[in-house]
Amino acid sequence: MTLPTLTWVKHEESYEANPAYNDSYWRTANLKRICNPQQGPGFFQRIVLDANAYGYHEGDVWYRAHYTAATDDPDIWIKAFGAQGSNFLVWMNGTYVGASAGISGGRADQDSLQLGVGAPGAHGKDSPNKATFHVPPGTVKAGEPVVLSILLRNNGQREDWESKGTSLHGMGVLDARLGSRGPVIWKIQGAARRLHPVDTVRGMYNNGGLYGERAGWYLPGFPSSNWEPATTMHARRAGVTWYRTSFALHTPTNQDVMLHLAVASPYYRHNRSDKSRTVMFMNGWNIGTWVGNVGPQTSFTIPAGFLNRDGDNEIAVAVTAEGPGYGPDDMQLQLVGNWLGSVLWEENAAPGYRDVQRHLLPPYPRVPEVTVQR
Image (cartoon, rainbow, N blue to C red; front, side, top):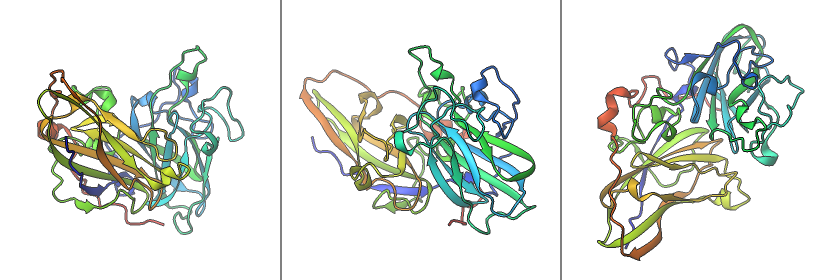
């Protein structure tokens, strides 16, 4: 069986990093206490910022903080955790100020000197106990409003096989010291409709809170004819870029054909130094996440029920990069095996974009994309 060569188109997002983005419909994070003390409140913010506390349990989560600056261009520090291999990206007033691995301590009620006891790691040597960001000159002025945007990758909930309490650790932004004056208003947005997704077939574990997920960019039938061609998946700047492709399969009768999606990245091959990560969808079904500075997986088996074995198929990939140039060279289908004597199977029935469009965000928000980048 000959596999098609995939050709890609792309479109950038990260709209939520723009200070003009409308987050009025987001959940306000204002809980002062919660049953599980490891979820907060934080030492400095004095409110619970844990994503689980607000019903956002899977995938990417956006946070936005609105406040008045106490000084010009203050250094800020943030504690955030999203399980093994997690990271977060930070913008202030639309200016990208950096990224960090998830912190090595998972407790929200630590002050700036404490590490916490028995806290889980994020990913080895790259994991700090907090991350300090140096704000570029001219980004923030004392007495003026600030919009802080944080994109956190939540890689899933922790299990607790030995009853040590690891499943109780906070997930999300845990605390922050911002150089603020007066109140700080925190907003949070993860997967659309939280525990009650629009797509009840693929379910709540299928998606996180990227704009493209909430607007259906991952679904078959999403119109992407206006997207630009992509020769690589290298990022133009820090943030999220989506890639889409379509292909036809014609699987021979009575043959059992298994495919996987293979990720090619020179940075990954060289000491796992590709500071990017993906979420990949086959015909709308989540088939995994690749983390370019963690690994170890570089190929992702596609369950047979996710494929149209004799017709058209679509792949969507969201690549979140910590800076320009990061991201895979390419992704292509590869054959795992081809055996005579196939067991009969059919593609899983699930909604496409047109089926659920009325319940999704607009394809593109009216706010322009971030234009201020350093």
